[in-house]
Image (cartoon, rainbow over all chains, first blue to last red; front, side, top):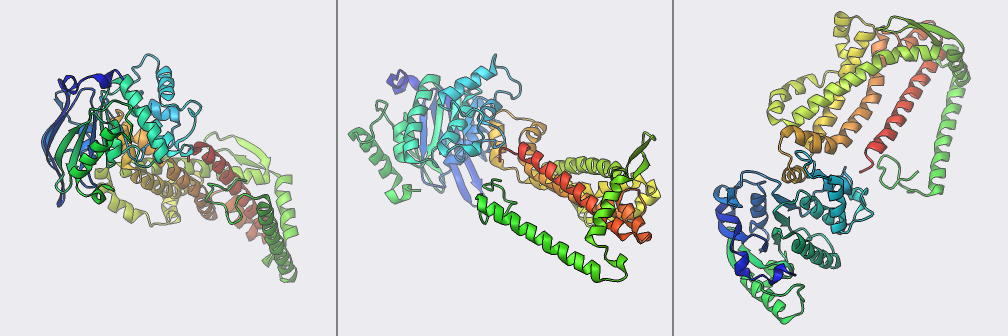
Length: 262
Length: 280
């Protein structure tokens, strides 16, 4: 709550992520063409766009998992040269290690390269508590529902206490009710940790529910089409007039509704 | 007997008690029919050594454990007196076990290395293509000239057999590691290639590695008997030895013994596998 009352200008005072003229091509498709924008420290930024607009490529580039052909990505002023513990990533299909229990998955990032937390077990317990998985510490991923798997994915990404949380359509495969719950939980966590979040989605409602700012991308070539600030109190009511207005404006920007449905 | 995720068992009548019972009864029926055919065949065939009957075979089997034989323990050189059946089984295991374990470790290591390292894969793939199709028993000639056909020679042949099966298990397993998991590990601080192999590739390949090893347990029994037919001591040698004396029932008894030994190892390993791969 405290964070959401900050004015946007305060937050944009320090850039956490700076993306400058980034391009990336795969054979004949321009996944990203001259993409530039920045994300302020502590900001919750959603990137929306049709499939093939390069939003996942962009997120992977910030994570250091993908090397752009041109342009540069700065995180905290330093160019990204590879993955790092300062950036946690949450994957669309969870990407949990199936041979590790919930505890083992969350613990993974704490043990690399060496455990430097004073009490890793306590940290893991704290995270399990944070994402509401008490009682499932020793369960294997196969025993969990989609929503629970993604809770583990979030806790695992949070464990090394990254400055930035990168989320690639994390709630795309969970049912609508679970997704609403996870939205509220994610916002709670974000409020507590004050991390910078870049959240990729194709769901405009989701973006408007979560974000301080929504970046709209266009496909082929992948470019930033426009940016919307969402100055609404959280928690946001999806039926409120302002909310509906924001969604409608973004939808117009994206083109016909049919284009945004996948 | 739960059949929910066990792909190896027949799931036509999944899980139900009647289904299990029916399956056991049918299996028992099949065995009884076989015994009857065998018995009638043995009764009606002359001379009798052509088909030793079930009763003679069981008697020969019991005889294996009512007499005793002294064997020499390799490396230690001391002698050991055991019931005859166990004595010859022990002789086989003296070359089977080291051959299997060493072959499996080398095969798994090379499979992991080649599956993980593209350059090494490029270097060795043609060589592997050429060497792989050679049946392990073809190496018996080198086993004889290099080691002599005793424990070491037989172990060498078993080694070759275990090597390739385990090689392919590990190779395929590592090749199939999902990039999503290696990506996740990268974002969680895994930097060195060796750490990635240990923390992600190896556990992810474990099911295939273990399947490879389990397959090699059976394959190596075939190979070891083959090697012993050339003269290495053990149960395979006793099969030939007994038949040279026209004691065919004793040959059958040793065949049973091999089957039992294999079954014990296979069941034991499956139990271990189920424990290790509980996460699947």
